[in-house]
Amino acid sequence: MTRAPFISLDGIDGTGKSTQCRLLVDWLNNHGVPTIGCADPGGTPLGSQLREILLASRAEITARAESLLFMASRAELVEKVILPNLEQGKVVISDRFVAANVVYQGHAREISPDDLWQVGRFSTAGLLPNLTIILDLSVEQAIVRRGRTADRMEARGESYLQRVRDGFLVEARMQGFRIVNAVSDVQTLHREIVAMVREFLKTRGIEVQP
Image 1 (spheres, rainbow, N blue to C red):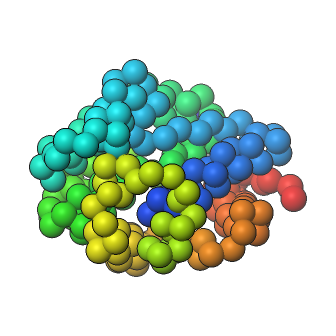
Image 2 (image 1 turned 45 degrees about the vertical axis):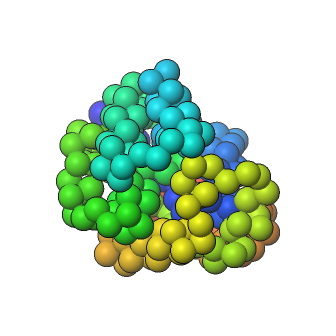
């Protein structure tokens, strides 16, 4: 049986990607396409513990250790959640995936992006999304929209977040990711993403009616 499509949404925090992931999962399920959502890091007992360390802890973590903790969480998520559901014919929508590692620890913390892609593929047994959508927004707008206390990595400041944003745009050009301007309101952005996903699914033989 052919695996179902795997889609990820990514971008700096404050772009609305988590909201758009939830809306997309609901839209697909409501249109008869069995779909689940997951968050990276997280989604498993180990992943939840690692997420707490990575995002809530105020301890400084070296760039390599940080990247490997993300990879470990993702390895569990792939084996226990993503792959089983794809093999059962369910579309999976992931809130972040390997590209986030490449950008947050690579472009923004000066680890080789190529090395991170290589380790990322090992951590996922070679699984990468069939479609990655980058929600792009200026750092200043994203901080205003975030509306909560910065997590451990966001607290590194605007210059760090600018390197993250720039990294996403570089990787999008290199990897063929789709970029969406996230300046729009929630529903307008949702419609843009839905149109993009509907077009993509059609190429996979999945027709989704408006």
